[in-house]
Length: 307
Image (tube, rainbow, N blue to C red):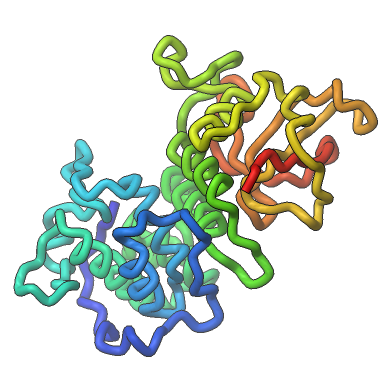
């Protein structure tokens, strides 16, 4: 949710020149809805502290790409501006003479502009400029200045971490291969379930309250793109070729086992999204989230896609 009111960012006129510095400017294939790709690519280069992938991560986290989203706190639209902040910082992104918080052509440019404005406002604060900017977006620039960095609020610290992890899943970084169409669809399905509570044996059905366990999530994600997987994680291991750790592609299934020499001991599976991260349903009491794949019980990977 966008908070503190400060002065309007003045660099919008230079956007076509790009302000992204050394940050990646590409978007991974299939991760951003087609209707918003050009806006995110263009405005995600407004200043060095943001990137198209970071802007995409924020919009996904704020609203799940829903332009009609409205929170109990009255945050509105795809970028979840509260009315007071929008009144001061909403911009006419499409130059149609109207600043409409419900119109992504205004709200997405406004989110980028507000990000860069906050980055400038907290620019003298020690630490990572992008992390400070994200913290200011969530908690307000005053708190970032007060604490000389990311404030010690669990909500804000979690927001900063989640956005940075999400950025990796949206970015087409140098050396990264975009997922196939089927893999992108499976990843998108799993992304939509982020934050869903874990349920042992859960398949995401209404009877399960839409909840999953690890192999239930991977099975449902690939069923959504026309690929039927077995139900158990150990059985999913045998559904395709086994790429090495340095050959992983987004969409590969990654497995973890008690005995690294015995696939029958596989106890967990996740969906690889790139940059050493997976989406998984980890355990009872946790929620579907991003996790690193590198751990002592990492067993290997399977590529179930046909395209």
